[in-house]
Every structure is written in structure tokens, then in C-alpha cells.
Length: 273
Image 1 (cartoon, rainbow, N blue to C red):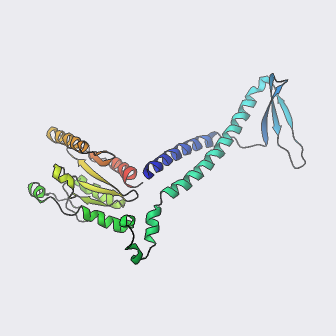
Image 2: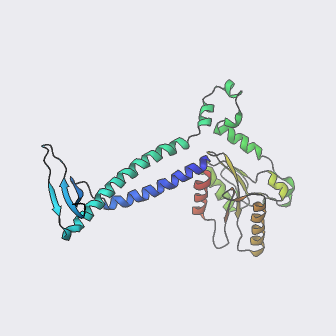
Image 3: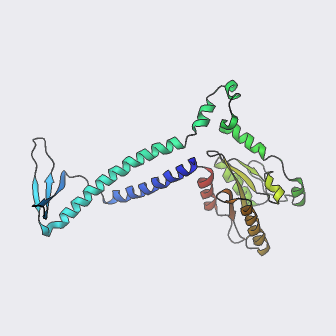
């Protein structure tokens, strides 16, 4: 629920910023005049350009002729835009405050301030990020020995952490995740192994503490490989793993390598919010 709230607030924030930027290009500053609209005898509409009261309580009121109706339109639009702009700025400030509140995890913050002795007595679901990541990585430790024996890693590629990986693209993915501060385990040991699935990565969104499995399909221009990839995705779906919901993946072909822009979008959208 917290994630959905943050996404909704972020969406509204982007829309408001877009409208704010649009208004700033056309906004007419307040020149001390305002539009007054009256109905003469309750029937005929009349427009007046009025000045605000000065220090000596004097003001000016000029009738706008029908032939000069564009003046009234300009004034009405300018007044509306200024009020709208002020409202947007106010709403953006409130949204920033809300986002700041929701982006903080009150449970973890409270738990982190406890003494070690008190922490030992409290439900450890509130453990701090560092401890949580350690336990999370431990849960995926090990490997499927039979899989590794059948498919040994025989490439020259190593991540910056020294992990031996199967492709240059997987090396790039590992390094990008590491640089972004996203915890990951390469070729994690998990229950999916028993279903014949061996994800390339298990990745963790620290903020939401959600785990995703990440597959990179690197030879989609080869028919047999593409067919196997499609079947693998279908298998994930059968097990309840949809893209963006516990599952992430990227593709490449011999002619089109790993799209770094797509990788950055995945990290920001699913693993950093």
C-alpha cells in the first residue's frame, strides 16, 4: 500500500510540475488592477478594469467597452492563472512534505534507535537495512550444484565485486546494480531452482524490502534461444511472477546490445523508490 501511495503522489507531483512550468511561460504579473463583472439591472453584463486601493484609499474604475472585450478576457485569464499557479505551488509544497514522510520508514527508524539489548527483545522484522540485507543475502546463499556442473561458467567476465558471471552484459548489470546501491545475489539459490528456473539475479528494493528476480535474455536473435526465453517467461507467469511484480528482465540481440537506458529505468522505477 505504501508503494502505491508513493507512486500516486509522484505521478501527481510530475503533473503539477508540468502545469507549473507551462504557466510560468505565460504568467502575467499582478499590475495592481483586477477585473470586476456586474450585471446591469440583472440583465446586461458589464466589465470594469479596477485598480486596488492605494495608501490614500483611492482607486480607479474604468468601464470596458464591448469592442474591447479582449481586455476583459486577458485580465480574467491572468487572474485565473495567478490563482492557479499559487494553488499549484501550495499543493506541491504539501506533496513534498507527504513524500518526505512516506519515504521514511517509521518502523525501521524507531528500531534503529534502540539499544542492542532492547533490539534483541523486539520483533526482528523491524531490523535496520544493513542487518536486513545481510539476512536477505544469506537466504539466497549457495547454488544448485547439478546446474553448475551441467552449465559451468567459462567466460572471462568478472564483476567489480569479483563475481564470475556468464556474459559481459551480466557483468554490466551487476556493476550498475552495485553502483546504484541495490543489493543483489548472482544466480541465487531459491525455490525456483526446483521448478527448473535459475534466475540470473535476485535483487532487493531496500525501501520496500521487496525481492525481484532479474533475467537477462542475451541472444534473442537466435530462434532456439528466443523460444526457450519465451517459455521461461511463461513458466514464471504460471508461478505468479509477472514483469514488475517480483520479476524483471531485459533483452538483447547480436546487433542490439544491452540497453543501458532501460536498465537505469528499471533500477529507478522498481529498485530505488
